[in-house]
Image (cartoon, rainbow, N blue to C red):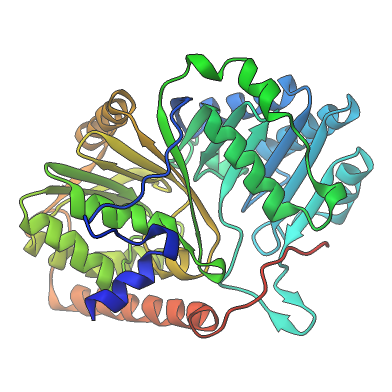
Length: 412
């Protein structure tokens, strides 16, 4: 049974060798910087857009035309008008509320804009499989990837702090991989492709960079399960500590089994979870798992200051995985997800220090005696929420479990 379930998480290129190691696939000529969500993130995003001279590729789950989104949209249109090639791919469900007038204005400015799989298309219904990643690539030189959508709630607004989330700024070889990925997802014909000269970009500065990075994807339809594989690597190879920040933490039984196996080997496991969620039933479902986690010696911390939306894991203060991947079946089996793995001790320790500050200054530790009411009524309610959410996950992912569907994007 274990071999069958392992195949669930590892594609052919990612399967474990006889030595028990997973092929790493890292590029080494990179530089990485941790970016916290909010004003710092959007200031950087807008600066990168404004300074781009050749191309901008933006792919995101949510783009709203509120104050934050309008600033990004206006900067994209300004860049297009000064001759920058701009390619934008938005999710057809989560960004479906973008007004037709704004879409027309963006296209009239010269922006190539498409929507990934609107919910209804040609008699088919697409819900579970969404374009969930969030990535910006400018000139093939700078890449910004994480879990942050483009909307006011992800930004610091007057009197309202941003949701807690993170991204990574990349310079170097891995950015060109992101550039190619954006082309792959967006382009339906040769004219759609953003053409960049790799050799020219290399000559402008890659040689002085030294950070190991790999781009990881989950897309069950095309047998990409790399982010799931990264988590399995962490669980099987960690020797000291794993710290996970996760929104919507509702892991599969297989994920839980491997997490517990790491804990049984003496690996300290810390989970930083939401205290406030934008989806109440998901938070209640998470709390059903608290007793299980505490029983196995896992440390639990809730972040109560605002919605926690981050998706980050740190292994042994040495490797970090950061991106759009939630620890639940929608990310594992349906949505198109993108994470960045950074194998660099300096970067990983910086991230860990930031997380330790969040735990110490902003979080509530959860135990069997404090923080959560463990009476029978609450336990029953959490079980009910967990059962409902897992049932919904099975409905949304059933089509992808049973049938391979074509990989395509659509134009709205």
